[in-house]
Amino acid sequence: MNKKIICLLMLIGLTTNLSSSMAISPINNLNMNSVRQVVSISSPQDIIDIKNKLSDSNIEILNSSQAVVYSNKLSDNELNSKLTKINGLRNMRKPVRIGLPPVKIGLPPVRRQDPDLQNDTGNKNTNTSLKDLEWDLQSVEADKAWSFVNQVRQVKVAVIDTGVDYTHPALKGKIDTSNGYNFVNNTTDAMDDNGHGTHLSGIITTNTTVSSSSTTTGLLGIVGNLDVKIIPVKVLDSSGSGDSDIIAKGIKWAADKGADVINLSLGMKGTIPEIDYAIQYATDKGTLVVVAAGNDNVDCSNYSPASNSNVYTVSALSKNDRKASYSNYGTKVEVSAPGDNILSTVPNGKYAYMSGTSMAAPIVSAVAAMIKAENPNLTPSEIKQILDQSAKDLGTTGRDIYYGFGKVNAYNAVKLVSNNSSN
Image (cartoon, rainbow, N blue to C red; front, side):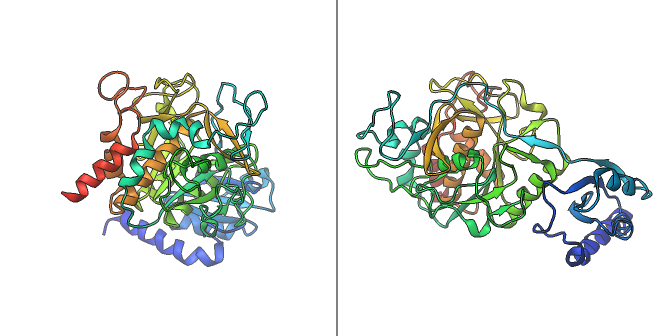
């Protein structure tokens, strides 16, 4: 038998045997405050050496070639010194710090209390529904698509971000807290202490009942009344920053918990192997990973995870269907979606406008969820193809670097799935 295959089988077996004694399951005492190093592993012996020589540390295996060695007792220098004495251990490095892409434009003031929104002069707009302010929902024709979806089963979208305020009145009943997790503090409480993750979640789904525009006053998610739940996975702290190994754990966790779609509205320049491996893991399990292109107005080909070949990368549009001034672009962009002044939920029962490719990505995640609701058997690659084919072409005819295949269109996507299912 090939030596590489033998080595891989041994590694898999060793991973299984060590799972109980070395706490390599997703829930353990590894957190953002742990001292840790990402190391390359080439054989089961590497893992055995680490276990034997670092009794005051633990190891978490990320994939067949990478592991995180961490300690809540040692200092950085002490852990690094001990690791360097292990023969053959390669490519030691600290996890990469990742944050939310900053948006370099001003944001409108917070709007509060549905339906008593404050207008710009401070007076109440008691006759204005939140739906009337959701230009994104109408722009992608989500409201036209709802009646055409014949939902087969519940769909789950994992928002891997700063957590979600699951107590928000508009989100109650829509957040799958039983499958959520807080990897920042290692608790099952994925409450949002930043606001970003709550905003993304409200874009995707809310508990407002869809009715006519004259009577619907609550905030409507892109999926409308469809049975779509959010799995809240907190990997970013209150400042909106997180570490690559923690984010990788969150991605794998979401895939293992049955997420149909994962939304990643985060990133940075460069490539990050552990995140790439986690995305591959999720894709292999049938999860579509949707990511934001970034907000630096540059080519995202060297951004992670936007440049990953397994993800579905989204750029942002302004209200006039032009690329938002801040939005990244490039050949990695698949589609575009509204990103400017998107109204959604924020913690403490409030609503706010936010802008960025961060807001564009969950719109596409929501449309993907609608596709999955209509046909749960579709693979990530098949969903991507439907999103591509159903997009409304913008800019240069055909695919281009600013809009990809065009603006995502929920109505066209659902009709395409429905027509294909009936053939």
